[in-house]
Image (tube, rainbow, N blue to C red; front, top):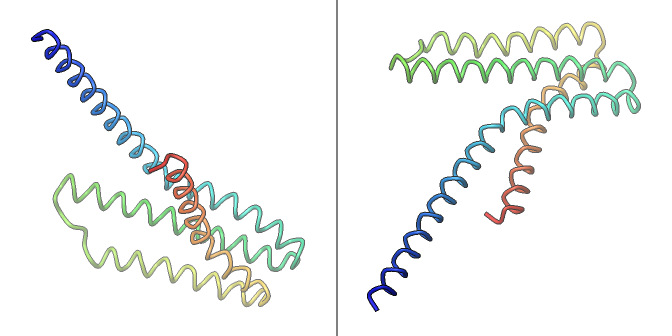
Amino acid sequence: MQLLKRAEWLALVRAENLQMKDEQSSASRSETFYSGALDRIRVSMIVLAVLTMLAAWVTYGWHMTVGFAVGGTVSYLNFYWLKRVVNGMADRITKTQRRESVWAVVLRFLLRYFLIGMIAYAIVLVSPASLYGLLAGLFLPVAAIACEAGYEVYIAVARGL
């Protein structure tokens, strides 16, 4: 009788250990999956830009395509700079426990929008029809983030989370 209780106890301990290992591996898989979101968004932006430029070329001609290419490039650079600034600020805050100057953050923020305004002005001077393409290209990150959200929902449903 004592031997049977001991065997049941050992089986229970082994089952709990397996369950803990499964939970740890599931957590690390989720962490790995979600840590790749920014890279997937970046790749989605490139793929969507190429596909949309091809569709714009066929449908609207080269004026709209050039505008979209410029808008997509500006939005990709803006996404890259924003990612870099956020990572830099997080590293600086966590390592040195100092906050970055508010004026530096505001200046970089305004500089990005000044750049977008100057490019839009130049495009309007060259070809007013390209402005629509520029504006569509500036929405490229929104489409890429929507694709990432759809992909994450699909993975969650497929894994049964």
